[in-house]
Image (cartoon, rainbow, N blue to C red; front, side, top):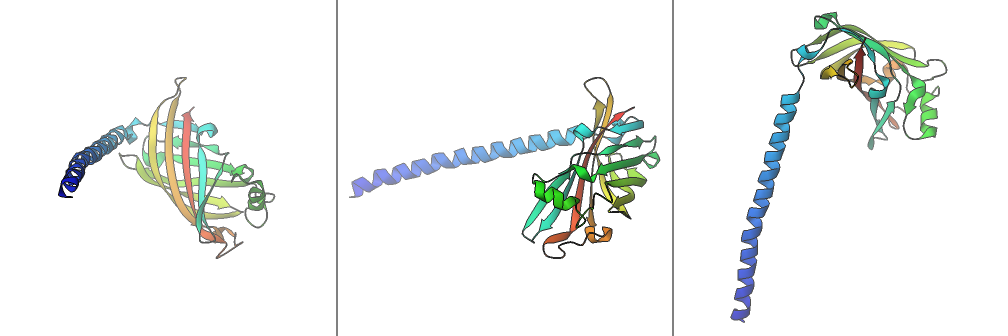
Length: 220
């Protein structure tokens, strides 16, 4: 019996000794790769001085408005608006910048027609009476890393509230036709009840709504 067990134990010990370095090597490679990607991402992060001052028009094909909201306290539901029109100004100084945008409620997209129709109804946005959401900036500031705050008046459902968006420059440079472009991301959290939308509160649909925008503009 001892003769049968020893080779087995030796085989298991050898397998473990071979497997451990392989795993360690895999983990180390993953860590190195992760660090390399992180360093590359950090190095590629745009600086505010890459921005070209001027007037920009929002490129609807490469701009998005997303919203996130709790459903039944179970999931974090996401939807989006597929249309956004507007302009922004990149000033010589951040405080000389400005944003003006309009989002048609009719462009809401949840991948479910009945839900989209409900969102457009008087229970929520009431698109027949209030066809657009609008935003007009009152103050813009960012640091040399392109991170800052976008403040302004957000109008939804016919009600206007002051809102601060966290702002981040995502890139600036030339497009394929030589046009000058700039991109920004911004995020804010609002309460839909502040805008007169109370349907389903507090359990069916949450009150807090996260709005996330990814905007690309073309200099005119």
